[in-house]
Amino acid sequence: MSDWKAGSDARLPLYQRLREEIMDRIASGEWPPGEPIPTESELTRRYNIAVGTVRRAIDTLVNEGLLERSQGRGTFVRRPDFDASFFRFFRQVNAEGEASVPDSRILSASLQTPPPVASKALGLAHDASCICLERLRTLEDGSLLTEKIWLPAARFSGLLKVPLEEFDNLLYPFYEARFGQRIGSARETLTIASADAITSDTLGIALNDPVVVIERTALGYDQTPLEYRCSMGAAATFRYQIEIS
Amino acid sequence: MSDWKAGSDARLPLYQRLREEIMDRIASGEWPPGEPIPTESELTRRYNIAVGTVRRAIDTLVNEGLLERSQGRGTFVRRPDFDASFFRFFRQVNAEGEASVPDSRILSASLQTPPPVASKALGLAHDASCICLERLRTLEDGSLLTEKIWLPAARFSGLLKVPLEEFDNLLYPFYEARFGQRIGSARETLTIASADAITSDTLGIALNDPVVVIERTALGYDQTPLEYRCSMGAAATFRYQIEIS
DNA sequence: AAGTGGTCTAGACCACGGC
DNA sequence: CCGTGGTCTAGACCACTTG
Image (cartoon, rainbow over all chains, first blue to last red; front, side, top):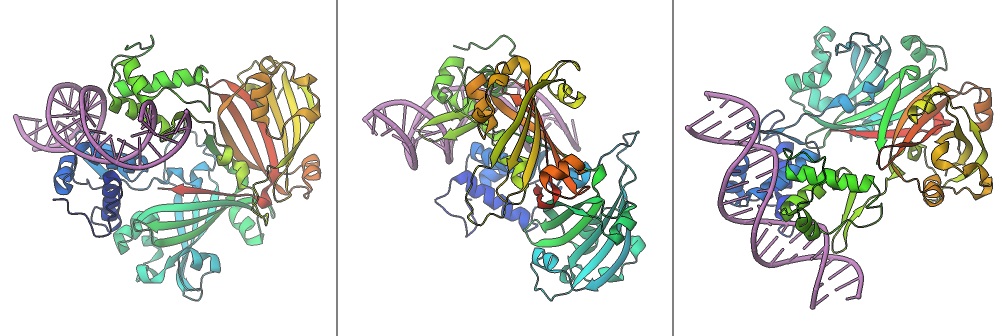
């Protein structure tokens, strides 16, 4: 009992130490997403602390979105929820309200030297080469998104041999199933630009029409950058909302 | 002791009932922003419940951003933090890093019939007239924002008699000091448009250049809409970021 | 029925802020 | 020094899920 990991700082409150302990287990893959973590009473026994303290640690992690409680069943490692993504905010006017997954098509996959933004986001040397995917997505309302996706070649070796038709609509489950790379979180940045010739042509809009540029860096549960992507869509169909309090 | 308000549902967990109790006190203005709420032990006495339960209720409200704890001093009603606003995300390239409050100038104040969006946002009849302010703001990097601000005349009577120079740079403290109207939260919506002749002229950009349109509805602590504003700025200097997890 | 998380209590001691 | 919030414990009972 009380088998804390080495790095644990004894001056910290117990519930914070347990919190870090749990986060480490998730980051290392010992407790994978979708799976339950040990029960509260199991944790009290294992670390020799009171239930209340265990609950407090779990509470903070639930609040941060890393865990999910389900009464009577257990506490589970949560998968990231990409409903929060900017992509969700391209206006959805589809009459049915069907949550049909947008169609996506991989146009090409190749080995290339990435632009500095991409190599920096992936934490690679500026001259390291990456896998680059080009992708076209059709949203619910018929509008289009063009994407360039950069992946570190070392973690996705063999991807270039996968036929383009075998890519799934959703890339993250595909990454997980084929390469064991699990996305735990992401950061997106939104800027506005004007469409150049190629982009306006692809998106079916006029030259110089405003486009929304979404850059995303996706990280593993251990915070390693696993993907950098840059997407562009017509700004006319974009609408985003926040709450201030 | 245990003097719960009438509306309190006895089937709800105690900590949730206390939570609503506190929210009501804040909404009614009984516990104004910036002021401390009663101490934890005072609340245990007043409602005849355990400290742990009081702490739990306060915890949730701190998490939601309504309260702020300060060890040794007390628990305080928080003011909304407009650092979260979209305005913060116009690129700030000022060399000094000084957090100089952007300059703002009221161009006009008049009584007008608002457009449907505004009257709807304010919860007014479509033909009710409103106070309309036109305002020009200069951000840290020198870029400009034009704003139209709509206020319900009933709550801001006398505003039209205030000389334009007497408006403060920050309107919300001004609303509070002069009219007793306190902003508790707000919702902002971001869309993209192209600059028309007037807008491009005001902002000093080219015709049809992309502009960011930010619509904000600001509410009182009792959720009454108190202000609707629509602001526009050059999209070139805009950059916004979110985290997904 | 067994096991899980959800609510609640009562009481202890610590750390910080201000008088 | 006193009062505040911060941490921690121990144990009770409830509500839900599963087998």
